[in-house]
Image (cartoon, rainbow, N blue to C red; front, side, top):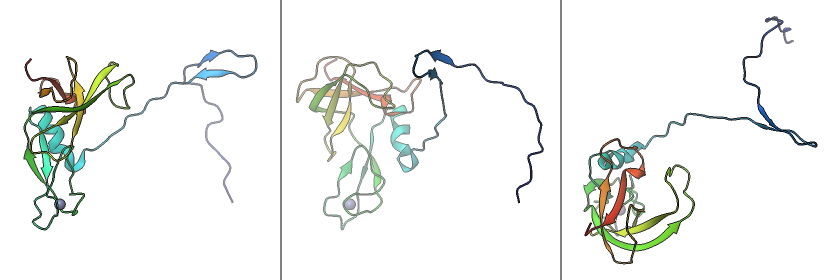
Length: 168
Ligand SMILES: [Zn+2]
């Protein structure tokens, strides 16, 4: 049988009264919430660390029995084709625009002003297309671009890399 509550019989309100958006039928209160989210990059940590060092790191499948032995960017800790552990390789920090689109709304975690040009970059030696954004200029399919890295005051997110036209 549960014991009766024997704690303090009085307490005090320590919160902040909520702002009220008065509506005759139903009250709406402004109730801000916040939380701290700890997210691990796990085995992909070298990729994000590389960005802060001005390096573009991909992963490569080196399993001799793998049918594709692809180089992945964004990196994959394990090869999707043969499930073997991949190895880190540095790839060129330049490429060509494969496709592009203008984004009017950013995704969660992309703390940037919109609109901006999102570009897909084709990189020599990489078997996948790498998504990023064009810092300045107007994208054209096939336009050579080079990466810029946020090595000073890095965000420790994917926003530590962006692209600019190569002739800049
Ligand atoms: Zn493989």
